Image (cartoon, rainbow, N blue to C red; front, side):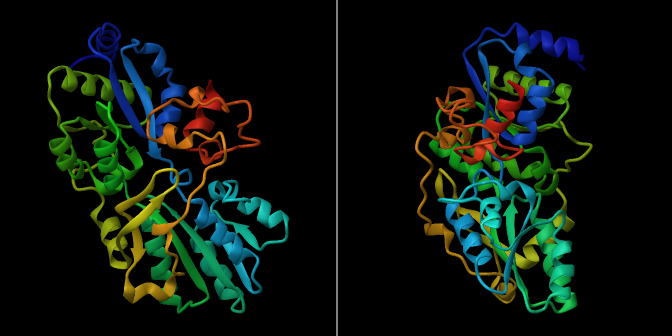
Length: 347
């Protein structure tokens, strides 16, 4: 087994062709900065960010719809914190609240159950956003709503799944040589699910934890596979990620949800990349056809190119000038998991 020092040494002395590795999730992006990983890489190895920030890829039309509900009599919108500051076509939920809209920030979906029980005359609209990591929480929420007989709490869903998005990247984006798979999502979906992607697109898919040594080991694994012309799935995060994932969590999700097309902000529609409520549970949600959503990013915002790995955040002319966390143009600067925000705080 190679030591960390030896892995670092091997990476540093790499002088082969240029290799581009996508770290899919924002938590990995933050960890890369925290551990100073880029300072250990030769110029031939580039780390790029991917579309693994759920708030960043939530379409503006979805936020507009939430704001519309916030302005209706006897309605209130419930949301996690990250979604509050992201703008729709004009305003964010925070701005809508400042203008008199009924919007409430929650820490847990189950807080929504308590509110709905205490205020039967109010219809609560829950902003159900996220990836496979968050979807089990929504399944638990619906289970609780069923058990309590609650009918005045509705989910407006914009839940997305990662495998179709990775397939999209492999099909549409050139130059990505390997993937550092999303760690938290992989805890739920497992490592085996990446095998068809590795085989079809002939790229390494490596699952790793969030410590610096984990990420360095993943970079070395991808480097080794690419140099040898190999492509396979490697799970370096076995303490948390099982081959089959968390079946109990996924079974709970698939009890209530089914795959659907989904609109990704800045990208467009990706087939079967969303989770929609099954017909039998449709009464627990609000129908919203975001698969045909119109999308317009603010002038000068290059979030699309950032989440597709075409540019780094600092290559956007607006980065740190017209676009800062306090006055963001695009969603990638707002969210704690957004690549632009992470680069701004750490550069």
